[in-house]
Length: 64
Image 1 (cartoon, one colour):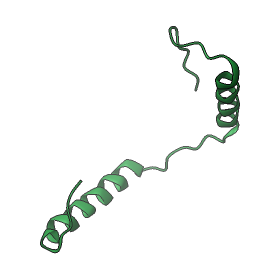
Image 2 (cartoon, one colour; image 1 turned 45 degrees about the vertical axis):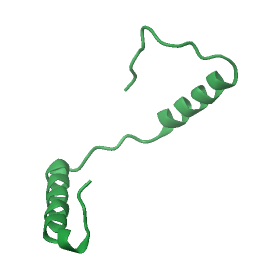
Image 3 (cartoon, one colour; image 1 turned 30 degrees about the horizontal axis):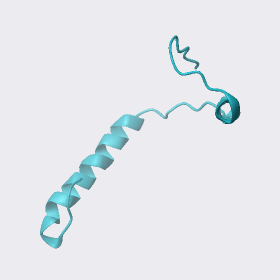
Image 4 (cartoon, one colour; image 1 turned 60 degrees about the vertical axis):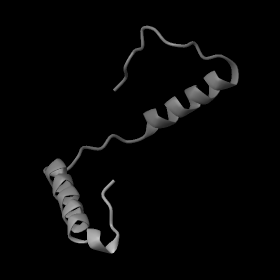
């Protein structure tokens, strides 16, 4: 997916060359679809981590 920027800085020289190389590299990467339930699994993992921290705060674990 490409997003056109209407206003932005103009890159020249080495910066423009590096940007173009990175852009081409990213464009060659395969597109992947997230598996069904990905965000639900992620939320469950985060909740387990938070629960662990709450249960072990006395040992020095801290939430960030």
